[in-house]
Image (cartoon, rainbow, N blue to C red; front, top):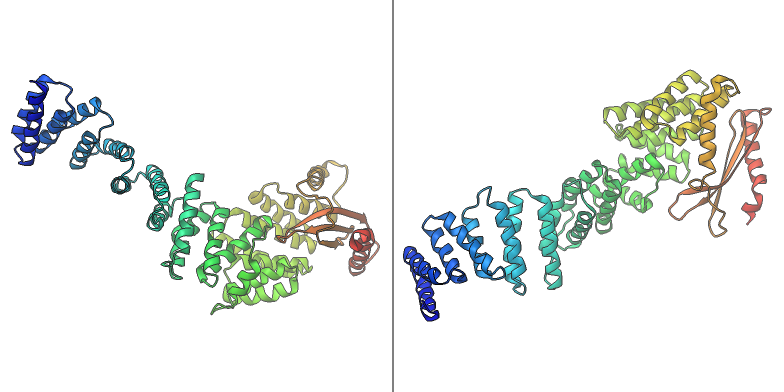
Length: 489
């Protein structure tokens, strides 16, 4: 069979397929293949005809043979794609995914065709719950849309839907979710009512899974767009208080958040507690106590409120009140199954309050309980050491070894760059003094733009010949004299 006859037979095979005479088409193709075993079109037509007369094995083999002959020709790949779509078995699904990916490579300049393949591929991956592969494909599709200057909002909306609720996000997925999140929140279709759903389906899940900082960054994006939204304000206020309890971090926008919360319809519960928290951060402990008590009347199970109430009372030396608040907070925290760090912080406060009342045995038990939640933390070691000092238990005997170990760890920590900072004349200063029963002490610190404080220097001296009130006054005078050169500037 010469070239002219081959061309004629292939034309007849094509016409036979159009007329649905598939057996005739196979006959024409086989005659061509007898003369030219590597005829690409003949193998493609065999595949197309065979799958229509229920010969799947022959059809698949024919398309694959054509691909072997010309790997970068579209026709056979499209035929194989059609075959796998008609025979979407468990075994064929991975093959179909591979075919879709190859077609995306081959449709180099046809954007409409590529979008069609992307849609079919993503539908298949969702159906198979192949989330990792799906995210890679979505990323590729988004990049194509961006390079073609096409509208990406529908795509970003879909990416957000696919990534919402996923907790084990990779850095790439986080970046994609952030971009999708920003696109969704800033779009004109996004309403105030959508905020609650976005917190429920995405932000709160990430936060509970342990990705607090990332969840917080997303929540702040919502707050910028909808500063009066209740879901946003409630989440940010609770997270702000939790972060401060856990590590002393003060998040940005707390004053604005507090101001917005007070404009809510019910400003007596959480808004009032958050206002008390802001007063606590500003060291207005009396004001904090008033606001926190008011808020807790309406929201008695707010564990953060009990913590800052107990802490404020402790710092004002109201040890009995602080003890009661700490015990209530412990019960609420345990009932609510909150993270161990928060329960541990309550036991630390309880131990400090009991030590302030000189109920030593109970104080040490509370600190021991704190250790079971927090381990040998810096705050616990400091409290433990000062408690033993007040008890008069520090000596060179065997019983003081624990205290000595704690003291050495504290001294090393306090003198490290993680705690002490260099003096900077451009930053504001704050001076704190204290007067425990065994002496007086003071600490000079810088106040940073984010509201955090870092110490520049510490000083202390033994003093026991004054009453407690006189010793408090002495501590203030002594501290000012000690650091007067810094304070004058």
